[in-house]
Length: 135
Image 1: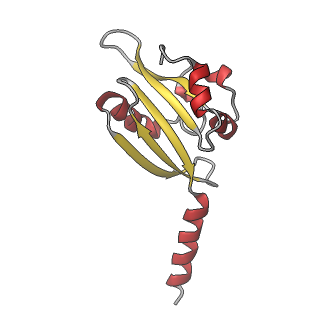
Image 2: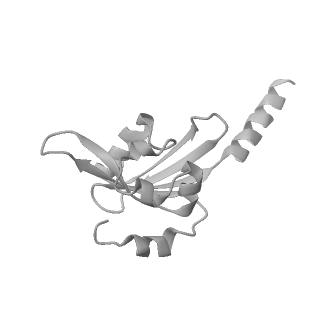
């Protein structure tokens, strides 16, 4: 993402209604530990995470409270290293939201995340099965 200026990414992704984040797997030293660094997030992700790109750009993904937790890092690393696409659905840490996270590798060592809030759909499914179970 070093060759793609933030302004250009923002022109393409900034107004997208779905939250988007691009992270890069960065190795601290050869053969040493690695961490994910935030390279870009759009306005929808800034709102969701209650942060500004200027605050999180080039910082560890752990600064993002919802997607920076350890439970997804293995999935993000698999995509960043091996490529392909992965989709994960999970309940948000606050328990009030269900999110679908699509991950893909835009370039080697990076993982792009596109989030979709599926809370409404999930609640409808749970309501349906709850009603069906009472019969």
